[in-house]
Length: 65
Image (cartoon, rainbow, N blue to C red; front, side, top):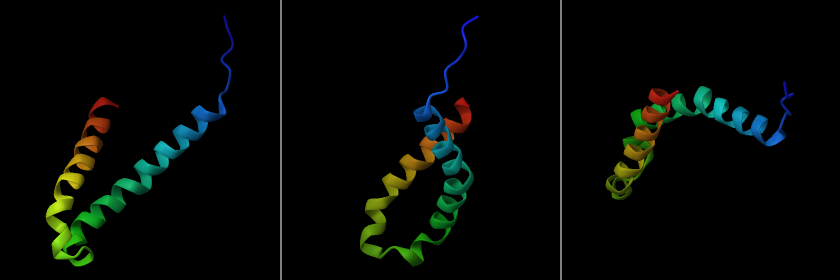
């Protein structure tokens, strides 16, 4: 049976991904909860699709994991 070779790039990617899941999702939720106080009113309408895209990405990631 062939021995698997450890790839540094794969290890780095998995570390980044896990860090984003552990720290990024709670940060995103906190940001969305307080976004009306953080972001000026002029930019809020433009950021709604971006936040929706991020939320959809997170939903798909969790669903497909």
